[in-house]
Structures are given as structure tokens and as C-alpha cells.
Image (cartoon, rainbow, N blue to C red; front, side, top):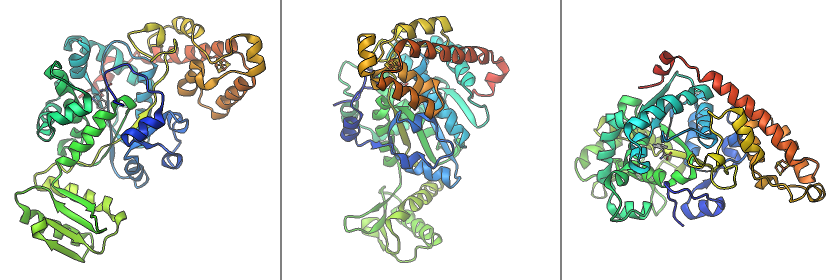
Length: 438
Ligand code: TRP
Ligand code: SF4
């Protein structure tokens, strides 16, 4: 199995996907204790994660942490794109600083748009919708890849530790791929890691909320972040906690500094073996590793390194399109766009593929299948906040007391409210947009 971020595959079997790629399940213990868990977290729309535990710790311990995500400004924004921004807005309410990339280089490289076109989409479509959906300007930065020199420089530099075999294995690139496309994952890695440069807040935990198709970029970014570290803090084969210097120059200096730092952290039983470029910490346990590692990351910056924390990610499942395939801008009947009129949206909903039985009689007798129903998905992802109300619809559908006609009409009503509200809120004055853009 391969994940291709640029295809329009829909992934159905999320358990298999997790197993195959080592994505962890986004289990309840990760979100129940968060303040007012968002419906996308509560309802299993987030199906997996990498490294979310560290984000949770940052929230609980009130340490600074960041969100970085991005969208390609290609065409119109639909309900599938809205999910990411809904997540971002939730995390903003928990105190994260927000960074959103307008992925114009990627849209240029992979979708064939010009940078002039992407600029127009970004300003007139995407950013207006982010604001209308409720994104606040405070502690929020929206930037374009093509206009961000630090991101592009970092992409170039990070490439030093990525080789062609790795790119082929990760993305299936071959001899006929153009270089701009091949380079675009490095730009995304630059997006993800640049927020940890000193200029943008320094090393800290960063969460990247994305669709599961983005996992190859996440793996690449996590690998690269580690490859650029000067120290590695880890458990050895014989169950010791050790700090290892990863470079070949200035080993003595790095070990001296490591010893000092460990002493300030109150680890005193140290054994240094310069030949192994190692310090073993005999009075540390495995649970101490995250704290030790974070301290070393910050030290690295002072010694001329990057000190990247490994970025975390959550993966959401995709919305099914109203026609039953993937929701996609290139198939307008499959998607509800945030700029659709309520009448357009109603028409699409009325024609949607439901999980209802073939005849009304059978539906009444055997019930419907809400798990296979795109109208139910609309309620679940976007239209109904109250878990009880949602559950009632689920139960009555299964019992056969709720009819598809009723459901569709209700969905269209709620959608009308949502769309009219956005329409109103998109009338953001230009000077307000400026506060978001860097
Ligand atoms: N590749 C993402 C997409 O296809 C967009 C993107 C660019 C992104 N840079 C990012 C997503 C950084 C998350 C983090 O939509
Ligand atoms: Fe879907 Fe509602 Fe029909 Fe059930 S009754 S299948 S939830 S539209």
C-alpha cells in the first residue's frame, strides 16, 4: 500500500492504513481531558496521530506550542477543507499560536496554477473563509510559501539530509517527474519546521492537523527534524538512558555542554565515554527522556544547531462526496462549497446518495445505514453540535422511523443557516485581513 498525497484515492480501511504505516490510533484518553473537546475529536473523525501525547502535555502543563497547517489555494473551498480550519480554530482557543501556509508553490507545482491565480484564490476565497469561520487574528500568521524566504531557505537546507532513494520510496517519484514537483515536499517540510526557528518562537511542540493523505510529508518532516539534531537522547539496547552526540566535529565541546546541562537537571550519576560520543545517565528513567530531550533541543540552538522537536500530527478521515466518491473541487456536484447559495446546496443535498433502503417500505421495516450515508456525515462533521441530537438521528435511522426525505430537508435547512452566516461574515473589511497576513 502506498499513500499518494496528490491522487484522489479515498482510503476506506483506516485500521489497515494505521497498521501499515505505524500511525497511532487517536484514542479517547488523548482528548477526553482537553477543554471542551471539539466534535471532530469526539466523534472519531480524527482517526490517527503521531506524537499527540506531547501536544497534550503542552496543553496540560500550559507550555507554548504551535499549530502549522496549510491548504493549496486551488479553486473554491469546500466542506472538506473547512474541517482543517475548524480544528485550527479549536486549537487556537486552547492557546496554540497559529501558522497557516498558503501552499501556492505546491499548487503551482502539482496542479498547474500560476502564482497570480493562486494569489487571487488565497485572498478572495480561502483567507476570507478562514476569518468567516472564526479564526482570530491574535497569535495567528497566514503566509504564502512563495513569499516566505525563510521557508524556502529551510527547505533547501533540510534537503541535505534527504536522498533520492528516500524520495522515491516515500512518493513513488520516477525519472519523468519534474523537479518542482519533486521539491514540493521539501517546501512542506520547510513549512512545518520553520515555526521552530528562533525568529518564529524557537524549538517547541508543533501539531500539524491534516488529512491522512498527508502522512508521507509528516513522516518526512519527522525524520528530517531528527536528522538535523546534534544530540540523540534515547534508551540503549541494554536499557540505559544515554545522550549521544550525532556529529563528528566538536564532540568534546558538545559532551562538555551535555554534562553541564544534565547536572543542572539534577542528574548526577553520569558516565562519559568519549569514544562512543556518549554520556550514560544512570539516575534517569525512561519517563525522563522527553524533558531531557527538550532541554537538549534548546541547548542546540545556542550551539548553532536547530534543536527541532519532532513535529506531531493528527489525521482526519475524508468526507465522502455527495455523489458517493471523494469530495472534490473538480466535481462540483460532489462538494458543497462555502460560497454556494443555500439553493445550490439544497439541490445537491436532495440528490445525495443516502444509506436508506431501496424502497420506503423496506426502509421502515429494516431501517437505514447511517454509517454509509453522506447526509448523516453532514450532520456529524458540520451541522449538529449536540451529541444527543446526533445520536437520536442515528438511532431512528437504524430503527426505520427516520426517513431520508425528512433528513435531507433538515440538513438543507441547517446548511442554509451555515452558508448565510458565512456569507455575512465574509464581508470582512480589507484592513482586517491585513492583521492576519505576514
Ligand atoms: N500539502 C497540503 C495539501 O495538499 C498543503 C500543505 C502545504 C500543508 N504545506 C503544508 C499541510 C504544511 C500541512 C502542513 O493540501
Ligand atoms: Fe441517511 Fe437520514 Fe436516510 Fe438514515 S434516514 S439513511 S441518516 S438520510
